[in-house]
Image 1: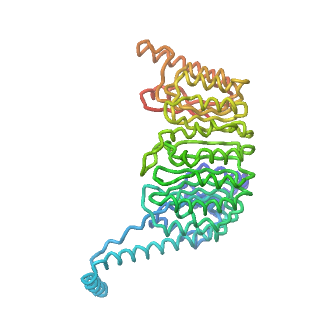
Image 2 (image 1 turned 180 degrees about the horizontal axis):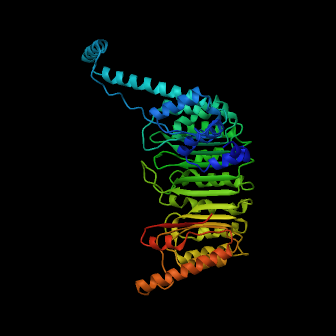
Image 3 (image 1 turned 90 degrees about the horizontal axis):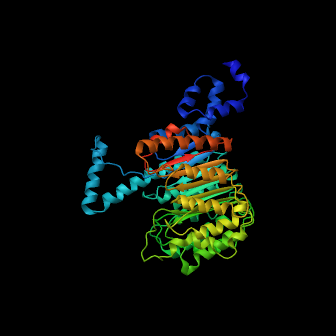
Length: 491
């Protein structure tokens, strides 16, 4: 074993351990002292706190007592709910006396049991928060921090406040490069005094629930103050909102954000409910969004505009034209021309079965610069695929290297067109609902036989045309014809 250790440097061993599951790393850790220290980096590199059970409690205490925090590079916290204690039958004399007093209090004050249960729940919550925060304070080298809340579950505001305010006092505030937040929007005010001098990637999902629009705007103003402090380092900004934000209006947010400039912002993504209710036209939501993107058009390399599949919960009728917010953003005067650095584009084709002309018009203006293109959500017909390919090669041969699209069905003809029209393609991702032959009017057995021969021929052709590409073996594809959706991905 010693000879094997000396034959390979530590860096190579670390790469090997990256491919081992955690349970095997723990077994290898018992081999000797060398692997005990080496596997510690792999086992504790990612710390997930997705609840507060006994294993999590032991893990946090072990990190505290054994000084293992310096291994943690990625931290993810998923806020949990502290369940109320179930009253058990008192056993000891002291417990029986206490129970008798509580019954007396309850006789004179009917709300006493509820207050007592709430007090005990808060006490348990505070103890759990204390253990979590003490552990986080001892993590000096965290580079990725995620607070991932399930928006369909209730929450304790104290927990969000604790994990967000810690960003201003933990040692890793100086090393953090990636921050991902899904939190109630009223907790974003905790970020106002936070300064993260190394942060490069920020992804935040706004969840407002029943808050009023005025209060939401005040919370977003505090968040903009936090963003202003990132202007020197921020390279990627992703904004998301869900259907559980009935009073959210991002018009003022993007209007205020347009007054700032982020000189290193290379990637911007926005995802809102498909009905566009969070960018209302009567408050110039689309214009303000377009102004922010255009201001950074000379430096943005990646742009993603996508739609959440559910409409927002509304207290009033929504604008029927709001669902065309992506088309409205792309078709603004001079918008395509302002994106002089754009190389990667992801767009949701929404609403479903809508006119492709606004998308293709925008694509024709930027296609000569694109290295990567993804068209999401709406499955394209073979005729629409032809229109997309015509647009990509409108002015000159397409130099597109990465393509991802959804198809109504996959056919050899479609693959043939993609291979012949996109000569520089290095990766291809196709999502489709069915497979059809180029000769669909034949009997089933003959149809499957011809389909198999055509696909085999085209896969071989694609592998020759794109030497770096590999595709799944054909037997894995043919049996999946009856399934509702399939994906071919090449990396």
